[in-house]
Length: 577
Ligand SMILES: Nc1nc2c(c(=O)[nH]1)N[C@H]1C(S)=C(S)[C@@H](COP(=O)(O)O)O[C@H]1N2
Ligand SMILES: [Mo]
Image (cartoon, rainbow, N blue to C red; front, side, top):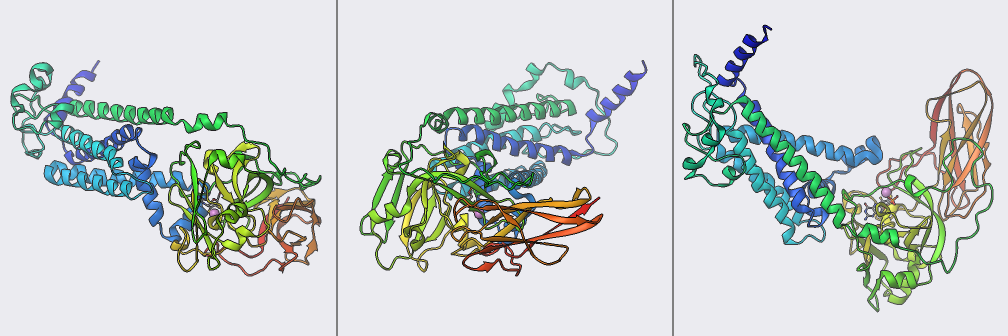
């Protein structure tokens, strides 16, 4: 074969000089950053989730996310917003790390400084998370140390001409006219060449991981192959550390097994029997009862909080005659009620799917408040989650006769972890962000003029009753339907007021009443159906609007989701074939 001369020619050239050492340095930087995160992930398995750098970084980022960006993310990516956030973070870190690598090759001290700055930023994020302990900084500090060692080991393996590069004597640029050296140095026995004598003066850490800094004659000449071998080993080790960290973290998570074994008590008051005919007859309309697995999830938590139900405790304090604490066993012992309630998110755009109906099991919040006895001038309850999220709920809403629940069960199961296990609030009539605190641990009775909640501090309203809304689900946007009459179906909600009518307008024509499905209660959504006249082939639009008995027809005025929920009449385009 003629391949061999070609091969050796290329090989010799590559051994002799590297035309793009900065690219190697960038790769070294990226691998070092990956090692920082992986090592921290492994160490972090023995700490709380927010001690893990990516979680802490992402959570902090979310907390500082400007309103427009948050809305953009939710509207564009919906419930995938977290995956997008992680991807964006990964990309940002990779770019910064590549720069740090390039910097490190030119001036080692600057590279180290860059890595240390990154580590410090992460430590700051970790330590400012809700419930963080000083020791939570340990994984990141360890990870940063390992990352610096890896960076050092890789940088000095960047193939260059002239004397071997070391962090302290940065890479010598390839000289024009340098004679390529034969491959013999690479063939030298690695053991003999590897370290020993030259290790004096070394700071130690790098040598321990990849190989010591040795004077040029003793160190085998850095080769392309050597660099990529080290890079590959680094990537493998980082991957193994990250995977190992995950595995250890989930093995150490005992909340899952406790939850699986948990038998919820029977309700003292079961849910009123559901009437027949709740489901719209139009095929394709959302199931009236939302399965837990299909229930929308919206929260700021990058890692689902793990709460040990056996040590969970809720404190009710502030402007009360008597401070109260209740633990999980006491809560399960109380007279629990079961209710079907529809929960909706303020970020739901017209026609959006951030709404769901479940059967909740819980203790009415008013009973706890009755025990605590709020003082006369209190007007708000600030409920706080273990991860620092908080919601401001008007006190009277939690004291009137609606079924505001401290919920433990969802559709006959303990709350799923993502929906707030072990305990959350669910308040009929209010959007989730001002009422439905998941992973709740604290309720402070206070005043709207004294305290503000998580989203209120970020531009959203402090009070947010649910707006009456009709949603067309069938036909779907841009659906193609056969000629003839078209079946329209959907869901409307107006928690606390109920739905007494839904009207449909085809192609901006007169409003016609839709057929309402049965109603379970004013706190649950209500479905509808409507059959159009035969429509001609081509594009058509269908609009829907709901009526509630208190405020009449839902407003036509369009409002954005910010600050207190979208309004307006949804319009859906479809095509008759
Ligand atoms: N701890 C915590 N609770 C939270 C939130 C949150 O970000 N953190 N988001 C709220 C919002 S905006 C909504 S709409 C509901 C959504 O509840 P779900 O995810 O169970 O559907 O939870 C509320 N409770
Ligand atoms: Mo929400």
